[in-house]
Image (cartoon, rainbow, N blue to C red; front, top):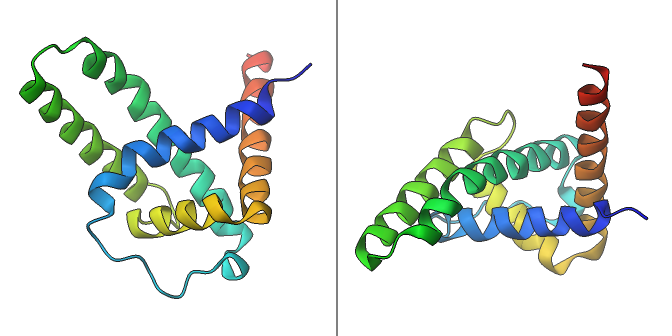
Length: 133
């Protein structure tokens, strides 16, 4: 039994939830549609999901442990900024494109499947590389 198909949508959801609030203030590129998204963009989006997941893993414990609501909001804002920075560092991806593709994927099953397949492939490659060490 494999848990990979269930992990990838969770990663996507976590990544989108973390990055969307600040990014949503910007307008999404109008030219992006499910049909126009290339394999290169899918790969870049998956890399961005992984980058945002790393930011999430770093900040979530701090957010959950913080008792003061104001300080918690400060940490969330810091995490959102770090997520946007992480997305912008991914080749062939901007925060606007990330948000646009993520939004489209939520409503387009075929695109979502393409993203999940890319995330699974990346996860398998990472596991293979870890076993080779």
